[in-house]
Image 1 (cartoon, rainbow, N blue to C red):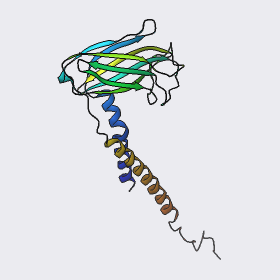
Image 2 (cartoon, rainbow, N blue to C red):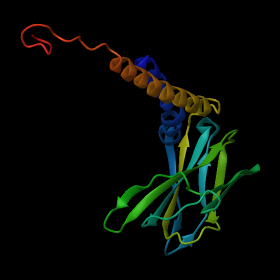
Image 3 (cartoon, rainbow, N blue to C red):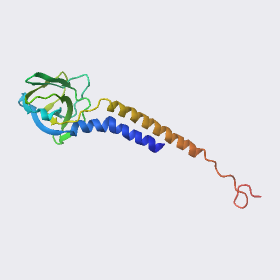
Length: 204
């Protein structure tokens, strides 16, 4: 039973955590990296020419900051609007609350934080404009901001991640119960009776 529940736990971790992470960061191909903020120059809009063959395009933002900023889900660090010839196609906010830092320059204490903005679907051939601005979060020392576009990105099935969480919980609980049952069974094994004769505890 322990092996069975361990497999369920691993399957749950794969569906709930590893699959979304891999699909977000590695699926598709990188088609553009657009700098939109520099500490000296400030914010600037960027343009990229996209083709219908690139769809769906996953839009990611890499923000470089000093030290370890304190992010909160209720605070907006950056905002983004994407527009094409057909008008606004994406408008989102970024909190970076679930972003894991990556070292860029240990000597300068710079860390990169990545957040997913969303997917561009139904793309028409043409130029798209990306506008990034500051949010209402305070105390974050932003050094630079880059937009990363990945074409042909995988579209996550929204049903898989909750299923993964459920499987992880079932696998973990089942594994714990199976290990406890095994320990109880080992503790209930009958001990050998007293020995008689020479060396025994009741020798005459």
